[in-house]
Length: 214
Image (tube, rainbow, N blue to C red; front, side, top):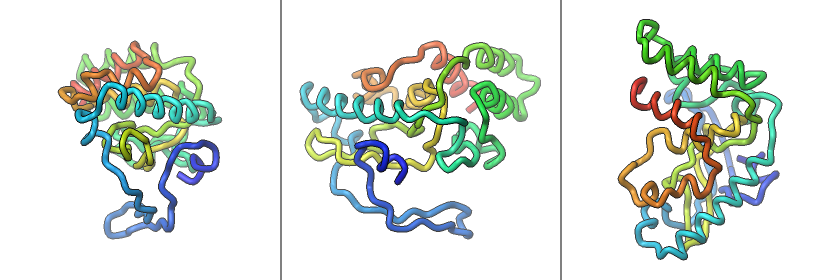
């Protein structure tokens, strides 16, 4: 989070402390408390102009992230990838030197315990063919209106950077539509595609994994 604060104008809470909780086997972060409402709880009350204002701000902030390129694929501190796809063996996926190695990691995770599933095999082959030629860029990796605080229609904080890192430039868009609340006003207004550049082929692969692997 401090890295993003130093390199962008994105509103992020200040970090006061971070420590490893052995009992919970996870890192705990003590951060600044910012007053505001969650965007997912306010979206349906917005006027069209307020929605457009919030989306324009978010589009600008995520464009800033896209300008920060990485030399590897993995967490921002240079460690392994933090992503739901890799929960079967945390800490063992990455960091990867390039997109090709990252995609092989995805294939390994998707195939875990499903070696005899022909549909999973097809998805893996699709990924190997489609996930190519993308730059590694700074990625929030959990873009969702529940992680955005607003005051009025002003974005005052983007939260939950635990899974952030350098990922293929298509990843933010694909993961934002991985398992969203399809019946929400946010989705009905096509908000994600109004903030982030769409990657339709890559999204087709990711959406299929959400239906068949999870």
